Image (cartoon, rainbow, N blue to C red; front, top):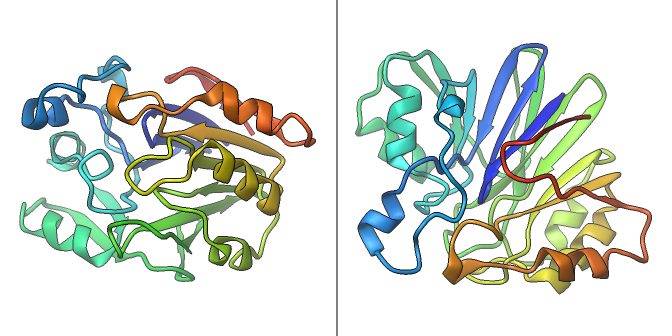
Length: 232
């Protein structure tokens, strides 16, 4: 499986030609709406604005459910969208064609194109927020979405995690570097990819602090820049 971080919480996964996109923020919509503090610190690379086979939206906040990006991905495309009910309601109002919607809640398991998807708990200011595990060819990727530290995420684990994607910025009801390091060690993945710290000046986190906190573990911390791809 190939993993490409798109900045903020956006991730592109490619498995045997099947494209899975999670929480892409590929516009300037937040700057246009809110101005100072929301200027992108990661450039937009339009070559990634290609409709995926599966689009996962973990919750309704605009840096995860970015309607400008979603419009470009879904208009005229055949895509399965996995999301909480509140997100689905918003997207249905936009009347995209050829879209299959799958409601995503913790512990729901769905197999699409031979890939297993499993909703995971999250504790966030959007009470419907979820994380997601994706399992294919013996590899498990866990994207936590936006969340604070809560033992439910640890209790919900039923597979060893090969790669954990975890927010570390500590603002907007997300884990900070300390809590993210505690959570990572509790889940004990082979690799951890800190996300949600690079896009906006107002919501930055310190990846170097996170790396230092992880230095006493055997978990590999991945710090590929946005748009770089690595293989699992």
